[in-house]
Every structure is written in structure tokens, then in C-alpha cells.
Length: 230
Ligand code: AMP
Image 1: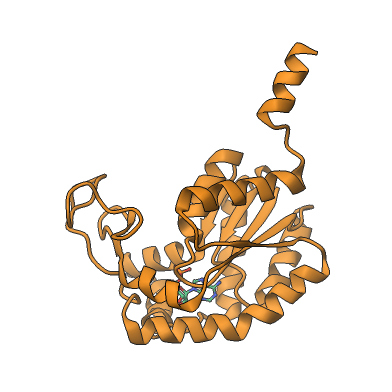
Image 2 (image 1 turned 60 degrees about the horizontal axis):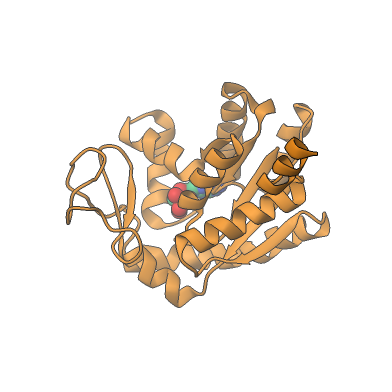
């Protein structure tokens, strides 16, 4: 089962993808995280990608397609994946279709989180990350237990290098330019669902899970109880 999560930067894709992956037992592939990790390790991919990340621009489609193909090879891809941050262009969506088709799979569901631009600016300005373990916090919706420190490892929290107003604006412009063709691409196949992403993380998580389940027709707790007693 292959699910793509779409939405503007700061829509909560990472948080939602992690929870959905856990709920459905799928692998979580977050291209932004893979690129930041490559930058941190000073890998050749990281050195190339850093220039784009720092400017809020997209890393070229060819590089991203190769990265996704490599991840699909590394995972037991037949178990299913949640793609978070990929694809971001129609060319990437086509490459993903090709890579999945080669493995006898396809994109089953695309869930787009819709969040107004004003809310995005507020959210990204209040996002903090842990430079050591990568945990993500939001001072408004999910603050750390102790101010400024990571709950998981105690490290001093910081900003993501691209969470500053000028770069945020560029990332939003890039998203806006690519969003419509990409959602149209998936809408034509009948796999697209758009849900409100500006609710509490828990409410959005419930809506995302309901959407994934509705399409995938997984048995619900009620179905399972009925089967057990029937
Ligand atoms: P994210 O963590 O998803 O917000 O991504 C952070 C940055 O990584 C983006 O602003 C891009 O520079 C780069 N990036 C992540 N995913 C992609 C992708 N699918 N295509 C191109 N660039 C990407």
C-alpha cells in the first residue's frame, strides 16, 4: 500500500506521516529528512542538495528520482510506504509511478493537507527541531516539556536552517507553483483526497487515518469485533 502525503511546507506532513506509518505498519520515506541527513554527513548528495535547501528551492528531479529509487530498493517496498515530501512536481510523480510499476506496485492514495498561508507562516516560525536526534516541536501546538530542550535527548533545540521568513516565502511560492498540476495529476486518477490541515494535530491525524482506511477498506475495530462475535 503506497500513500503520498501532499501539502505546503509546515502543513504537518512529517507529524502525520509518522503517525500514519505507525498505525498502518508502513515505511515512512521523508525526502527532506534524507537530504538533511546527507548534508549533516557531508555526503556528495548533501553537498549538492545544500545549495537548494538553503535557498528554499527544489533539488533537481533527476537527483530526487534516483534517491527515491535507492530508498525503494533498500526497503522491503512490498510492505508499503508513506511518501512525505515526494513527489513535489509532476515529473517526480511520473518517476514515482515508473519506479513503483517496475516493482509491481502503484500509488493507492494521495492525501493533501490544506492549510492557509497565514497559518503556515505562524507554524513555521514556531517550529523547533533537535539538531541531534531530529525530533520536531511546535511552540504553539506541541512544545517540549522543558523550554528549549529536546524531550528525547535533552539537546538544545534550534531552528531548521530553512525556517526563516525569506526562505519560508520562497518555499511557499515554489509549492504554490507546483501544487495545482500535481493535485490535478492525482485527481484525474481518482486517488486524491483533500482534507483540512489547520485543525489540532490529533483531529488531523484522525481525518488522515479515516481517509486512508476508507479507500483501503481495512477492517475497523467494529468490523473486527463483529467478526469475532459473529
Ligand atoms: P521538507 O523537509 O519536505 O520541507 O524539505 C526541505 C527541502 O528539501 C525543500 O525545501 C527542498 O529544498 C528539498 N526537498 C525535499 N523533498 C524534495 C523533493 N521531492 N524535490 C525537490 N526538493 C526536495
